Every structure is written in structure tokens, then in C-alpha cells.
Image 1: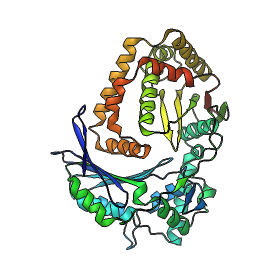
Image 2: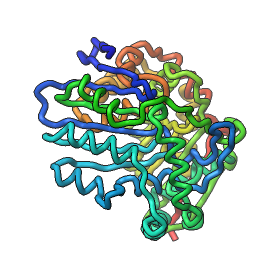
Image 3: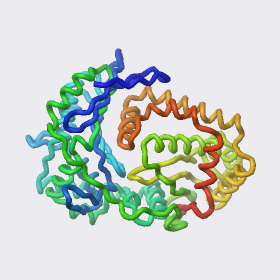
Image 4: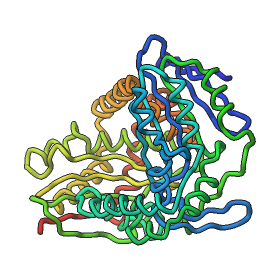
Length: 423
């Protein structure tokens, strides 16, 4: 068991890697009544084609999400989610482009709940009947998503930015693709991706690190197995596949997303630095306290729902910004004008430092939310870094490198747009 100290925030993680390859991270929080556990696999909606034991496998869209739905079913006919709830735990799961995570929080019975979490996630059980039933449930979920303005905006932009990366398609798949899923498909994908060497276990609360590791070693497979090699297709250029995608829906005013692809670094530390640099730069130039937002908000061109940030998953990254506007063309022009002003004048030093301090403060506050903290740590482990490193890297970022980031990626040729217009 190794101890990782982060003196800037006064926290220490205990970590070990089990003989089966599973990394375990425990953050003891003495005296806290609520504890959190997250057991996650590096497997999501984009992982449709993979190489394992020298053989390529192609799977329908939506398998990872389908697996998440079915993993709570146990061979004895019980449902793990209902059992966790009966024990006083609040449990759930989620699937993203490259991650599936199962988690719970509780104030008692932590180790019993952890034991159940480890057992049901590592014990697949599917029947023809249960798969057919779930196909109907998920098909209804997919149809409801098709009527969602947010979903239409987001996947519209992904389809505009990316030519073939699977992240452009819904994590849930389509009604047609999930109809192809069989119990054999689910068993094969579980065997490929739900192996400890491709997963991570995170526990936060008044828990004992040694006991957590011992329980995981006792209940999970003993030997390390080969990890699957993912294939997302040929590397894409940084230019968008399409400049614009439009759709008409029942909205009172136009809604938009603007985006630009960003080159995703190879190493974890570089990835964390890029994420921090992008967030600091974007908040300084376009965030809620910026002259850009203040002016457009006063003119009625933007609302408080305007958001901007960097998204990364499955080896791809992009800048996203958007919200509601009666004149999305004017907003797009204003973004490019703000970038041009930055090219000539640079950032205001005082505003840049205010944004840095605000980011640091937000990150400190996030430490109080154990669920959010576990999720952030999980994602960082899969990306090759540890989230608490941000407290050391953020103060190092220079104004010049943040300016260079925006000038490189926010240009006329790099921008793409997704629009949802009133019917």
C-alpha cells in the first residue's frame, strides 16, 4: 500500500495495484458519516471495435450502455440495485463515451455494500428473455432522447466536428443497433472490458484502505488479463467535417453550440495541463465575468445558460460553447472578434489572475463532494494522471500559453456550429 501526499490541499491517498492489475485508490476521511465507492471500467459507447487475443471484434452501437442496465441482475434472481437501496445505500450507474461506472454512497454497512458492488459488477448474468425486455426499455429511452433539444444540439455538433470518430454517435445506440444485441454479445464485451486490469476502484470516507484492498482481492478474479486494444478509426484532422448542422424543434428561441477540435496529448500530465489551460483561457475570454459575456448579455444576445469549456473522451477533445440566443450569427461573430482582440491586446493581467483564483477555489470546494471527487479521480486515472495534481499545475500556467491556446484553436476555419431553430 502506497501513500500519495498532496500537501497543497492537505489530503493523502492510499493506493495499491492488486495482482490482477486493478488499481485501488482510497481517501480516508476520518469522522465523516457518509462514504462513497465507485467501481468503473474503461469502456464506453465509443468502444465498438477492439482487438483481443489477436482477433478483431465489431459490436453494435449501444452495448456498453446496455451492459450498464443489465449488470444489476444477479444469477439468483435478485437485483443488486434494490439490495443496495434496502441496506440504506444510494446507488446508481452511468455510461459515457469511454467509461462505465457503478457507485454508491452510504452512512452504514459500507463493507457489505462494497462487497455487493464488487460481486455484481464482476458477475454477468443475461438471458434471452431479459435482453429482449431491456431492448424495449432502452428503445423507449432512445426515442425520448431524440426529442431532447440538448441531445440534438450536442450530437449535432459532434457530427459536424468529427467525420468518423464513434464519439459522434449516441452512447445509447439506435433502436436498430440495440436490436442486434444478444446475451452472447453482452458476455463477450463483459469478458473483454470488465477485467480488473481495465478498471479502477475508488473509495472515499471513513474507511480502511487495507480492508478495501483485501476485500477486492478476495472477491475479484486473481490473475491479470490482457487489456483490449480499441480502434476509433483513422486519425482525424483538426478541421471540422462540416461547418454547420441545423435542426428545427419546438423551442421558443434558437439554441446553438459552437465547437472546435483540439489536439489531445499522448501523456497524462500533458492532458491535465491542456484541460486546465483551456478552462482558464476560455473563462478569461468568454466566461460569465468577461467583457464579452457582459456586453452580449446586456444586449440581450446571451442568457445565463451560456457555458464554455473543454471536453475530452476516447482520445478526442474539443472546445464547446453554447446556449440560447435570438441572434446566434451575431454571437459567433462576437466570439471571433474577441479572439482577434486577444491577438492584438492579450489578456488583462488582473482579470486573468481573478479567473485563476476562481478556478482554484471551485476545485477546493469540489473536495467536499465525495461523489464528484470519486468521479473526477476515476476519469483522471483512465487518462493517465491524478486529479489532485491540478492544485500544483494550475498556479504554473502562464498568461502567454493560455493566450496561445485560444489563438491556435478558435479561428474561423476551425469553428463548427450546431443549431436548433424554432419550428
